[in-house]
Amino acid sequence: MSASAGTGVFVLSLMSIPTCYLFNSLIYSNSSEAFFFAGGTTVIILVLSVRFILKRTPIDPLFYVFAVYAILSVVNLIIGLEQDNIIDGFVTFYLKVADPHINTAHGHMISYWDGCFHYLMYLLMIAAITWGDSYRAIGLYWVGSCLMRSIVYILGNAVGKYGITFGPLFLVHMLYVSVSVWACFHIFGQPSSRSILTYFFPLQNIEGAEKRGLLHRPQDLLFVIYLIPAFAFCVFRGLIVLDWSGQWAQDYAHHYEPYLKDPSAYPRVQMLVSMLYSAPYYIVALYALMVPGCEWMPDLTLVHSGALAQSQFSHIGASLHTRTPFSYRVPVDGQPFFLLINVLYAMVPQILCYRCHTQPAFFLRTTTEKKTD
Image (cartoon, rainbow, N blue to C red; front, side):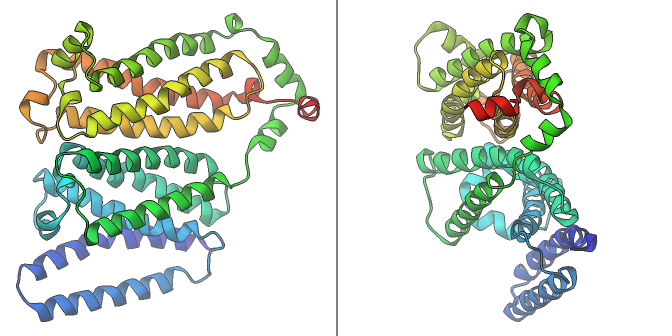
């Protein structure tokens, strides 16, 4: 497939900006004929654009999925910008009839995350497919982010104060989730890069890395030291949303993270999902940093890093956003400590992921060890 296909998807995704503005203007013009004409014209333009872009049929079906998701990401960014009154007149009609969850602080941050970070992920994966490169690493990072976003959003909608509203938008969202789950399994089915890593790291390098103890790997020692308090912090916030009556929990929630008590249920679900997801990961990561040959560690760090980046972005943003009631926002005096703890909690796993992929010799196994297993 030619590179023009990837460039075409990028251009096509930007077409959603004038399309949204046109639809919004025609809907408020109260002209059914104009609305029908705009809809028909848009469909024709999209069909012709796709036909022009995809002169050769891609072998990988994920190309089409990422192309559609890229368009939706731009729309999500438009929604976030209009909710913040940065722009106006693009999706006003949608915000009036949309699911009320999208107007919450958490739903607002999801719009920004999809419109910026996920959009970049889709373009990178489309570029990899276009050039015939492996997109497993980028895909696994997206998998973690997508799963965390979907699980928290769906559960938050189910138990939150608005409840689930069954309608066309709900069906569209479930279709999005179903396709995303299929895409996740498709990405997991891509060939692993372990054989390539073994090729670049000869037997002597792998054996040398395995013989080095933790004290002779100061970088890994720092990660081990970090994982222990990170595990405690993860469990601590989970206990807070479970209404633990300890004085420490009450003081922390009152002075630093009152958003944990927000009745929208998103922070409660977020912390419980993170506790059930991250806490086991920290234990497994401790084991992998001390015992050589855990080949699954690099892939696991990608999935966890993507999930934690998404959850922390949404949590930090919602804790400070004006759409959160004032009593549940982070107090001004507690913001420096809140930002320090949460940014550190989000960034160190990204560094650990980078370490596992740039220096993976300790996690690789020799051919002899594999045959013995």
